[in-house]
Length: 78
Image (cartoon, rainbow, N blue to C red):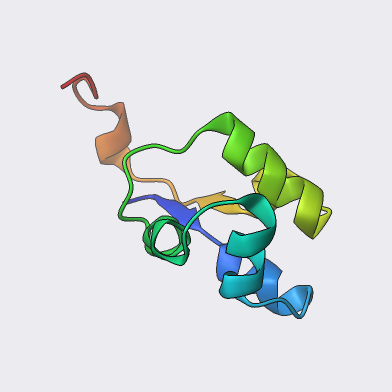
């Protein structure tokens, strides 16, 4: 998948654990772990906003994109 979650790098920069972040934003460690691994199909903007508020960052600091020509093919509607 060309969209990469870079939350681990931001946590390391902030010297914060995933457990601490999950607690501070009010989600389970399991849900945070699924997000970090890229195994979720969606995440609420409110959750991203909470992460950004706690980590003092922007949404683009939590995600990265690597171009894949397949992204231009077909529809992503399921």
